[in-house]
Length: 119
Length: 478
Image (tube, rainbow over the protein chains, first blue to last red):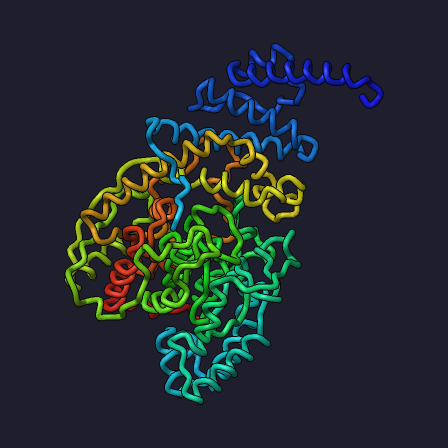
């Protein structure tokens, strides 16, 4: 890469960015099986296993996306057992998010972490 | 020579004995230090003892009182502090291997306030690593090994203020400071049979204390009686500009008025009946008996249900997300691998995957849940329930909710209204007081929670209960 002329490097970076953007978008809308078929994700996902009971396809896709990103960043640090445990953790986290999301909020409902200025 | 009973005296009684020169602070400190070195070692209750500091503070207290300068009920009275609170020039390990050699060159605000009150610091109490900030699956998860429950050393103290619970229960100090993000004062107080107060969020400055979840962390006392908790809170509460979330001067300050809790308008007590899907019937029975004690004392008690809502999930998610930020350096550097617990070593990687939108959604739901919880106090002065669904569990037992162990629904989804989770999430004051024993002679605790900032009514209810019962006077034989 260091030997490439600046213009080529920029061009390549833009193409890479575009490709990554497509992959990211795909991760958010495709179920795991479809995503695997695209071959767009190079990370190992054989630990993911079958969809756990009680999670929708969309939720399981979200777990998949988070797990894929986690492996992309930290995969080299993790043992096989730790990867298996992380899938369980991400699944548990997803179940909690599902529970929270089922609690309806409206646009005007503020956040508990709104900054309050004091005089 | 002090008798064994001396070490189980309340803060108030010890303070009075010191004030009237019936007990020497130096002799008392030496006696406690000896217990800390022997019994404390057996229980894994301390990370660090501070004998030089303690004896200097005790000598200063003795000299001042002799000279007629009396600072108040904590003057000359020993205590311990959870090892996530900075004490200048002493190790502050946060209970975790990566911080085993950490120290600070300043005191936390609570330490400064206790110094000003003339209190005597015996040492730094053991704790669960990072106070469970990156998760843990058993009581073994500590730099100093598991803390043992003084009522049965085969059982755990609960966490994360594990050492503080053991210290107060075993008479290694008359009180210890703990911290509570989601139940870390209430649970050890329940399992160790002591009175533990988790004040309203923002009531006590956290400056100089380790952060886990910025919007949920609190500090509070674990002691023999609710009255002792109030005496300590009276010293450590108050606005601190160094803590962003410290309650401002525009909110009502906590001032302990130790009037007879039997006087005043009758308390309206709601006995929560739906907070645990499955609780030990003995624990429920102990609280039912407490209801009768309250009624005999003139309170009005009625059964009630807590509204449904994802309280536990909101609490858990808030902690996971905020802790991922609080400990991002450990996660990014990979040093989280040096933690003791297998869950703690990897949990941060998973928590980093939450999005900003996830966090804000939880916080928007949280505000609605806070309002829901608050509405309960339109009808009731306080709400009571078992502090925990069981008495102390064996140390060897793993957390059945360890999220790394399986991917099925977790137990706490059944306990989404667990009272320590509800009160933690909503920043409510709550106290756990001893209310009976299991058939195995392990203590049960009763949680009393009140409206945000109404710490006084929680303390009044607990003092009322303790003025008509004697569970809090019992201690383990060691």
